[in-house]
Length: 193
Image (tube, rainbow, N blue to C red; front, side):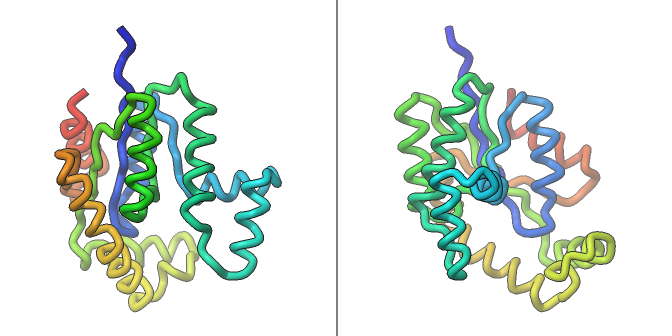
């Protein structure tokens, strides 16, 4: 019998530790990391038809539309059809994207296993991002007002996705405060593999 794929949507506001935790999950479970930002950069660099379309849209200062992002995700999934599963980072961002992803995966009988959301109080996020700003020199991590705006935008945009995955019994909030190992342990426990 074919082993069931482990498909995880990892969520969390800026500074929650998604990047750090995704690496542990990728290594532990042999997952392929699907980050929309990475995919867009790779397609643009490769000058693929999707990349050229995306570059033109970005050049106008617009957001890349769902059709292009979903096509990039589909290409990546098909290129790694033998993978143990995927970790989706930064995708889906809207209910329409979540529905498209479900349609894509359900057609292969490989549905989303879980939507895990790292939950960290706003004051802790601000502290983490200001600290990261000191070491990374990222301008968006050095201005507290900008940080709070990014956190607010995340909360506003992802609330419908929490409801969407909760209705499917796939949403789990994970306490994102503690040591890296403690948080990884909570994620592993939630996955239950």
